[in-house]
Image (cartoon, rainbow, N blue to C red; front, side, top):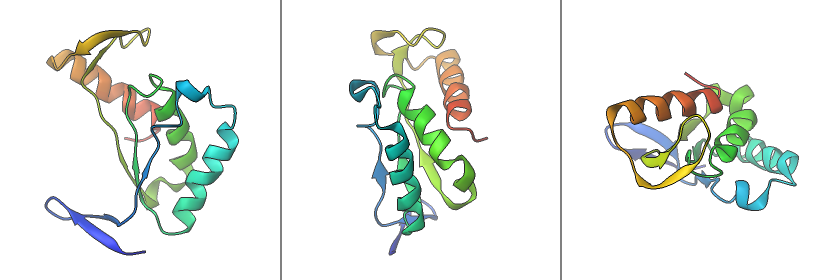
Length: 117
C-alpha cells in the first residue's frame, strides 16, 4: 500500500478507514463482522484508523480499541474530542467544551477505550 506523510513526518497508509458508521446509530448488530473488517484492512496494508468519542458516544472507540488491540504495534489511531459530553454518563449536553479539565478527561477516556497509551 502506498504511504503518505502527515505533518512533520507521521507516515500512514494512503488509504485510511474512518469508523464513524460503526456506532450507536447502528447498534452494532454486526460488531464481530466490523472487527473482522478492521483487522482485514490491517492485513491488507492499511494502518491509519479514525474514530471519535462522540460516535456512540464511546461505542465506536470501544469497538475500534477491541479490533486493533492485538495489532496496536502496526497501526496509528486518530480520535477526536471537543463536544460537551458528560464523561461519566455519556450524555451529550450539546455544543462544545474545550476546557482543560474536559480535554484531560476526554483524552484519558479515549485512551482507555482504544486500549492504548
